[in-house]
Structures are given as structure tokens and as C-alpha cells.
Length: 315
Image (tube, rainbow, N blue to C red; front, side, top):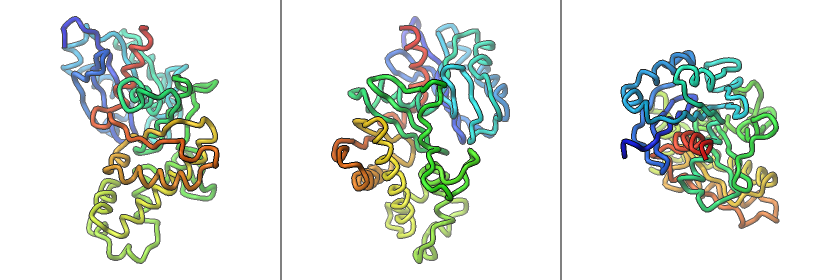
């Protein structure tokens, strides 16, 4: 990195983990750190931790702005509002808090929107103007891009696909309703399926020998041939594929870009999702929509996308 090169501080806030880094305009991540969300019970705790990071301090004069991706992030207001997967409650003026402390312009958006921007600028959606990024993490998020622009809606909250109800009387969601997509297709949804799916293969599954199994455990065992783990993966792919088939009626995307650890399952999960999506698509959309996997998973598309908010504002 040239010492004269400007940087953006990109921050991705998730229900489980927080990742932040310093990013150059060409998409090089020159510093990155991962921390657990639970260790920061207030927004101010997170702010003070990042502000005291030695790498951030060292490069402070090169940082021209801050971009933040967060659940229920409102781009227009710079606030996080009633995020069901965060312990922070109510309406949090996070952009203002960071601006006041750093004395730098701060831009905040939904974490899935940040991931979509990252894919469009640096990743697997560079050739696309109409696509939807689906983030599969603690919850399920979506960043909708139409004609090369993120769809925010009139109030900044467009794109909450994870809270479209798949089963109105289904699993209880953190948002207070029942049957939302993220209660089935997220990493936490996969864990709930371990407990809730009935199967004769359940008794013989290697999952029984794991204390507090994770979604990764399920997908790894499925690759190894565990029958119950395979049923869970198949069930999750079916739910997500059917949902994506319905969502296609909204924006007719060229592709869905899947982001998150579940999507990185050697391409097998994406193939299953594609199969179920095609089975349930309206005929006018059949064989027209791709399922792509994020190429920025290891680099963190959300951090890159959050940082790109800064560079976009400077153009």
C-alpha cells in the first residue's frame, strides 16, 4: 500500500460476529479483525474497541470515511432499528455515534445491502445489473440490485427477504412473528432442524455425538454421507429454493448470489437450491436465473461492501 493511498474503514456487524477492516479503493483489505458480538453489550463498547485498535490508530490519517453494514440498518437515517438478532435494542443512531467519535463521515446500510455492493464492485456480480445477494448467517438477509442500484424503498428497509413468512404457523422468529425464512434457511435454522426434524436416521446420526453441533458440522457430515445430516441439508435447500422461486416474481433477477458459510459447501448446497428453485419457478422465469456463490467469502464481501459506501459517496 502506498502511504498516500486513502482508506475506508469497513465494519460488518452480525448477530454472532463483527468483522472490520481497512480497505483501499481498489478493494485490497490491508487490515482485518474479527470479534464476537456478544462481547460488546452496547454500541459504545464496540466503538471504543475499534477506536483503540492499534492498526486503526496507525492509519488514522489515511482513513477518509467509515462504512457500516448492520442488521436492520437504515441507509437514510444511519440507524439500526429493532434488529432481532442483536442484543442492542430500539433505534440506535450508530452512524452519528461513529461520526462524533472519529470526526469522519460515516455511512450505514443493511448488512446484506453491503454484501451486495461488495459483490457488484469487487466480486461475483461485476457483470450483473439485476441480481439479489442472499446472506446466510445467523439470520437471512437480502440485498436487491435493480439496474445497478440498491433498492432501499421509501424508508430504507427494502429487502427483508429473511422475514417473509414461509410457514405462517411455523417456527418462532426473533422478529416476534412465526415461520420466517430465516428460521429455516439460516445457520441457526439448520441447528433448529437438528432438533425438530423427525427421521428414522436421527438415532444413527453422528450429530448425536457432538455437543452443541453447528451448521458447519451438519454440512460436513452430509458430505461424509451421514443420512440425517443429508436430510437437513436437503430440507434447508428445498425451503430456500422454493422461496427464491417466489421472490423471482418481484424483480426477475439475472442471478441470486449466495453469501455465507452454508453457501460455501463445495457448491453442493447451491446446486440443490437451484434444483428446487427451478421446480417451483413461474414458467416465464425458468432456466433464466443463475445461482452463484460469493467469491468474496474469505475476503468478507460485507466489509468490502461497507467500505465501498465511502468511496461511492466520494465520487
